[in-house]
Length: 497
Image 1 (tube, rainbow, N blue to C red):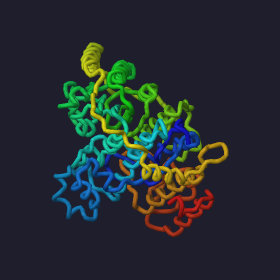
Image 2: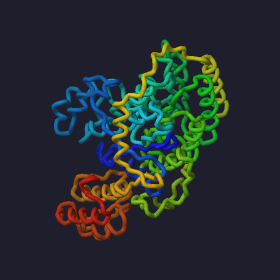
Image 3: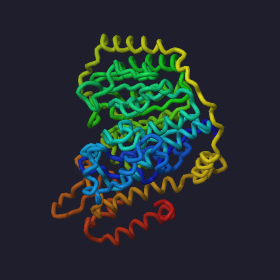
Image 4: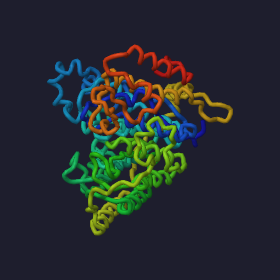
């Protein structure tokens, strides 16, 4: 492996969790994104690593022990026993208890923390963890669909080896959990571009600039609804350029929440796929060690498009706009089957030129005041920790390289397809419910007497095979079909499940 390798963290299970039938956060978006990455062949250019699960000792470097213990115990089966603690930890409609919740949290945070360790040990220059980027979680409570703040955990890891770390957030929501964690230090600068006003979480005003030693090291760019590519670029580039000049970070964490795209179910911006990707390319152009994370995004097919495209940006590869027909989720991207379709501008741009000029001028004036900072009393940076390197090597060992040095990922590709079939099994078995968003992809046969409901995005061969099965019968035969699918893929079910 060379430093030029872009590392991509993913785990086959991370998309299998379910917040609830009507909840807008859908981890399945991660499966759809990974499917596009594989369909475009990007996995052959990436260093693909299975995301590790964090243990309790990793999580309590930021979160309180009491809160983590609660997350470990929480499950739908024992919800009534823990109900008295719900308000203490902000558990409710936005942040419900669901099956496998703690496992999901430890999994999405694993790539962020181990990715930071890779940057610490100078093993790579860019690390991607799309399941991460959950920026609202606080030290002792959940918030905004986020339970564990993987970003804070990753930055704390980076601070062990880097004097100054820059955090950039292009999610439509203010990165409040990250700012709160580092609000009084000058070693971390948080820069958040977000919609402000009557909009969750309601924080991140222009004059919210940090406290004590961290004063001026929190940069908030509060925007109005409907911002377009041109206006976003107008405000983004000069602010980030000034941050790089005056703060001079040694590492960057970039949160790429895709809910800032147009047409997002919970968003209200008009940013295009190219406009969003431009931010990633611009930050990358400064050639600093970079941890690239996901975040919000609630129109599933557009989340997958956005992050697959930006994986290409990290690799300096421009992807064809036509989605490969080999994608397992191909039918999910109808109509057009395009990677970057034009997005409807549903909101009037309320960011006038005088408003943006005043915003930019005020922020640039503040940034000039911190030139040369921080004057931090740094301890001696530790040498390479053998235990961390051994763990990284162990994860790398799961992926061998062939003579050309390209990762041999037959198991990887097979996992994607077998997981897809397993999801079909769960759906028909009744373990997986569809919601309003998923109903858009459901095909109801003309014969209403039939109970068969087959998602359009399944491959046609599977549709034909699965017709005639219902949720409540023939499960034995369906399991046999699942085994046959694994044989056709020439992969050991025990390895990939």
